[in-house]
Amino acid sequence: MSELKAALDRLASTRRLLVALDFDGVLAPIVDVPSAARPLPEAAAALSDLAALPKTTVALVSGRGLTDLATVSGFGTPIRLVGSHGAEFDDGATAMDDEARVRLERLVAEVTALVGHEAGVRLEHKPTGIAVHVRGADDAVAQRVLDAVGAGPAAAEGVVATPGKAVLDLAVVEVSKGAAIDQLRDQLSADAVLFAGDDVTDETGFARLRDGDVGVKVGDGDTAAAFRVPDPAAVADLLKHLVSARASA
Ligand SMILES: [Mg+2]
Image (cartoon, rainbow, N blue to C red; front, side, top):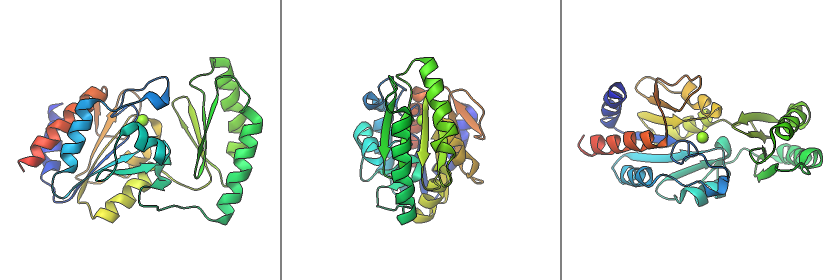
């Protein structure tokens, strides 16, 4: 943690700072029922403190739909919210056009007909796509559903498939957390970025980090991030450290 703390101390003295964070598995422990996920109180308090500091913007960048993210996180202005892997910004930015809307209608119809009836499978409708959740399904059903969707609707032209933990996210516009972080960085003219994530989808974020940024992978798994912490409790600790370092910088 000491090298990470040194990196956070350097980050704390940057002029305009963007703190971009995944939600599930980073601020909130992973739970079986996605709607029951809540940020750790220590992490939530540190985020509010960070967001109150001058020239400091906090953004949650999640695979969840924007409304869902606002509900489970409990956050809103001044904390920025970006949902659906970057497809939904809280300021209304969107990448949908007429062709994308037609693709979305077809995608939703195909996925629903193919796996909507499977036990324990939940389909989550999003403004730019649909997510197939299999956390509640038996292993055999989950595998069958992911295979069928992967070989069918997910492989269609103009559909972007993003696998996560027990979920296959399908979007009709090209979006990524990495692109979302770039967009926020430009919007805010941020001089440096802290990004923390736990899932494979967060690697698009780590891949876009630049010199002076700090990337933190939460938990196990391959990563392009320079730093790693074990769990959301450790994320809360690093956020607390950043708050005090930046407050005194
Ligand atoms: Mg996550």
